[in-house]
Length: 558
Image (cartoon, rainbow, N blue to C red):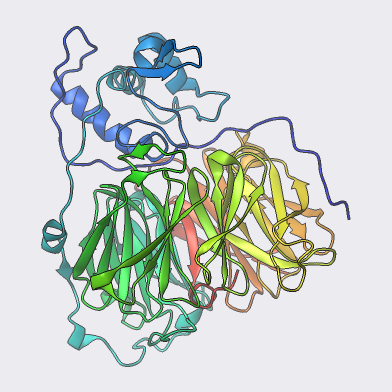
């Protein structure tokens, strides 16, 4: 097997993240500046939060996407100042960029926004960005809702099903989560949650203070900041037991190793909140504003991702714009210890190595995978990758040449980067690139299972439908693509995200309709993990994206 494959020269389009509509803010008054009527301003503000804020930021200072401030001043080496910004680009140029995208990474919005919406958006981003309000602990507490009282929590499952092989599936565009029986393939319930749920996490097996019934309780985080609690032991009609709102715009959630606390991370306000896992009562809020790895103060330093460390009483909080990983010790909330670990910008998705000691996360704007030693609470390594790494939940496996390895797909091009992650057993390959695989297109997710001979990658970020709608299966033994499977030929649909069932005999893949239809237009295709042949389809789903198997996620199976 070759230990190196040439990068593809073509850089594929990077998708835009999604934000949410925050509280209403009046249009700022600006003399001789671009202006919109009140109705158009409010509509554009909502659309910006839904379609643009994820990459460009609430305050438009940029992150994965470029700054969209009206005026940006840059001091040159010779002391002169260069002015750029949206005002410099102007109305006509901005409309073209929004409609047709850029080679630098932004996808086109001509199929998502109307001509009038594109015109108004171009004007809107030439205006000063409105600053959304803050959210206090008191405000959070006022949003808490209880649907099932603690006294009514069952002491054993009420439905007689194999709940550890349930799948919890995000139905993105309708703000719901589907609970699917992995044995029978029945959709048991569509549970209302927050807007465009980004992440779902379960209580996990932990080497310190094992929680009761790992995998029973699941917590979702919507992009509207709503955190919901789901109890898989309830009958389907009562699985949603409580909710609370911890931000206006949010992305991730995690449960403490002892099952006592839940942490939710905000995009806006930039903070994290710690919540009682049983009652969903907000307990503590901590701002993540601060000084980044370059020494610059950042107001909008957002929490991109949060993970529970398997062997420590801590969470890893990825503070995106700071380029820092905060290791937050929850053992004493009154005297909260936070170790701030400098790495690289901009932090996104990550996963642990098989031992649970080392955390591996993408710093996609720096084209690196960052590794943190959670035992020593320090930076372990940074690995150079192809453009814009994005591992999603990640994948670990054994390679015949390099030993234990991990891999990532990339938003920037069709490449899989594979590196060694066993510093004890294979120190010569630890945190070094083992090999790269050239795929047909840029993708979002990579996934495998210890019982599988393969790992799977999607190509959702390729602009051509036939590639976007296909997934590729790669041999762990040879590092070669053994099969390309086209999931669908339906216009406007893409293949995205993978999950194995509990024993690793099946692979579930989403057929995701890219429209924002409120009708059930998506499917999950199920493949035999060994023969790679399709064996079943689950229909009647609303834009299914992420899928999470209870056993695999509560037992750190990657």
